[in-house]
Image (spheres, rainbow, N blue to C red):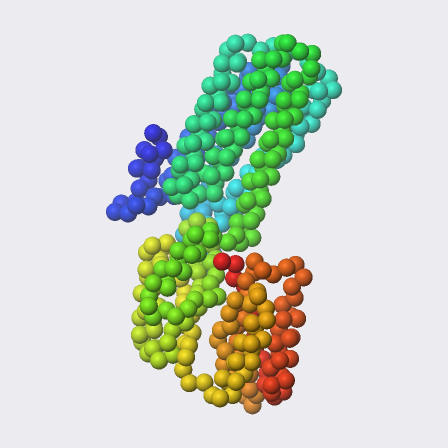
Length: 390
């Protein structure tokens, strides 16, 4: 299998990881060659057969060739090292490349939709030989192989571009199959098969481009990592018996090569600073080695010696919190002095899955601030709202 050879060539020595740039290059060049070959062949057949649907399928292959070449460029630029202006690397270039390609695919779909509608209004005779039909059959099997090929590589290196390429190739299997069926039955009906099939192919091209753009925009905005990954990372942190609780975890992805995560962990207030520092350094090292995630841990001491006033107010706020099913927990509760004023500081972790569209964060804060003011009108508040979805 060619994909196995590519992965063997791209394997990083003494690891079970692969050189993403090399895999992307080889996959992109193979895709470019095959798509250009299919595109030229179908374009010639489409012209000779006077078929707009075959020509549309040919142009679809040319757009795939551009897509494949853009894959090479995407991997090249996204693998560039960090610099002064981009300290977290250039990994998101891969998403931008994919978004540009999706726009190009949709433009092609619109153009051929217009051509297909014209052919429906003014149908023309199709001249299709056995050689042309045979080539369309071969094209279907080539595209099916390309879909499986790119799917296996995308899983190996977790690449959105190769995953999108695999899906696009599978859609091409469908569109070419529809064209083939239309060409076989074109001689047996006066129905404008060519134009209708061309319109179907155009619609499929548009749908593929839109789906790809939607997924890529979600990644650019800041898509959450998989639930499985988050649970696995948090589980590995909790394996250390000194960790009493975890909250306020966030994951920031800068392409597939850079993920930064932050988390608050609770430890016994009696733990020494040195011991806490050494434990956090060990956990951060373990997480990076296993997941290649740069983890930053904030330590929150629990227990300790609270004043009578703090104990009383904490109990009041805990009772208030229990009224709301969407408040998961309360953290970092403390009364502290800043200048000549006293503040109550705390964090509320909310279950984002239980919030409706009418939820107002400011109203929740105001209600808690009023509760604290009723306890002691001299107290100021510093309330932080956190959202958790897992």
